[in-house]
Length: 418
Ligand SMILES: N=C(N)NC/C=C/[C@H]1O[C@@H](n2cnc3c(N)ncnc32)[C@H](O)[C@@H]1O
Image (cartoon, rainbow, N blue to C red; front, side, top):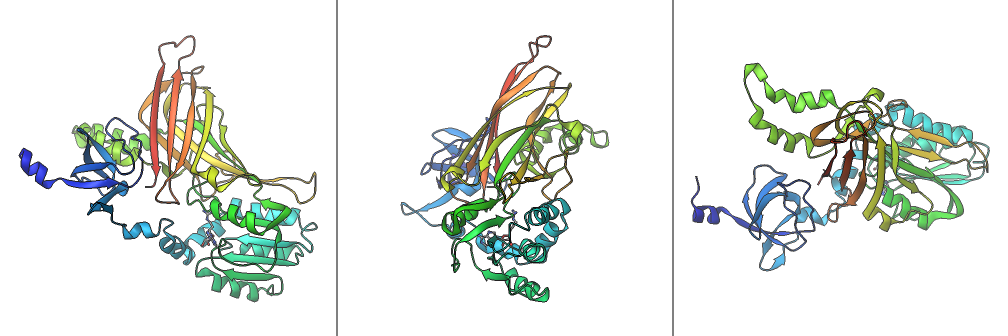
């Protein structure tokens, strides 16, 4: 057991890089510039620290070692977009194979090109973040655009150039290697197409590059594909996930491991679960769109903080373990009144590589048909790590008339990922 001064001696002072709002009673809230005393580092992500006499968990990524009064620039912060790692990943085939193998996703883009093939004649197209060039190749294969500028920042671009030539489309498709916000096109384009959606729609924030390219290269009256996007939410059951990560500790091999459940909650339920597959029967209410994006009017500044509201009427009694999120994007027709193509990544559509995203509550709540679950969602972009965000949920459960005492409120913030 450390004595007081030993404890003092092992403490280190850190400076907060930016504001942080704790999402549970054991997490400290602080402001950029606050000086915190770190007492322990139980994990690489969460440290045990003190601020003005209050003790709690703090996210390690927000802590900067203060040297001689100035904040020493943490070298990893020099790359707040983590481009080295990000484009490094896209320079290998693993992610491209996953995306190309996603039939729902790839067929949706093929359908967009096919159903607009006549209108695409003589059009100039920019394919932002073309990867292996599949969308650009669909344009050349299924339509007669005058030019497709396929822009790709990773080293995959050199292979994409080979694929274009291999398929005989090098007269129509020009591959440009570089970040879309930095490359120069010889002309403006009529259509800006991109597959930019990340987990929970926005993670990776590639959408920022799409907006910058729109403002710079899309002619007035040009078309954005996708044209709109929506984040959808639903309160849900997650029995098997809860059993696997939390109930497990109740009686493993006839022993009581429940003292580990607070750790399990911290380790498994603090961050959202990507690649969750929700079954339609897990939905406790009708899903609702909480965030809607118009790709013609959305501004980069809007991405800092996006808010939405929800009001669910519980349709069937069950256990409310958390919320599940997914997204839908729409591609308007190039001709007025033409059919819109939709890519829906929810449980009632074909499976996609995004699957869905599960936000687990700290404690499940039994709910009955007729109860209501209302609240707000805030997507707060990370001020330091520009591809990350925190999703903060506030909810109130109101019992139905025949279940009036089931009223409670809750709030929780989920870092994605820092
Ligand atoms: N849908 C998701 N999440 N990612 C799939 C799409 C990601 C692809 O777009 C490229 N990319 C991402 N941002 C840019 C940019 N600003 N300029 C040029 N290429 C870029 C990546 O290297 C991948 O090949």
